[in-house]
Length: 87
Image (cartoon, rainbow, N blue to C red; front, side, top):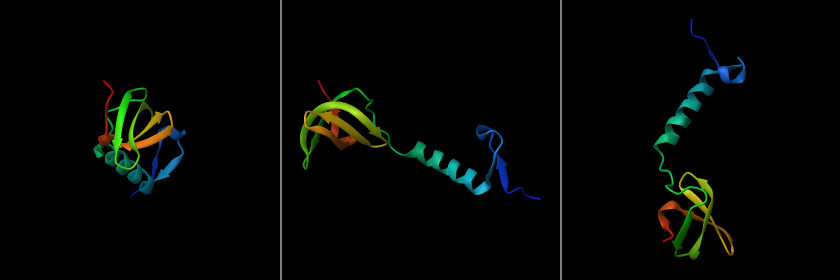
């Protein structure tokens, strides 16, 4: 007989469904294969984009491959491939 619930020790023994456990495992596996930004929060970078222009600033937000750079004009989001370290 197959159980439809897998006990989750992180939630104090509350049962979760097998589909939820599989979805969490799939999301963890997919997150490890996606590209990540090499920049950390606090790094000084220069961003060059044809639409928002060239801006210098500090990394304040980091989401997978999107990086938020705080500039004098506010926060500008760049793809991590459009950034380089400030010399």
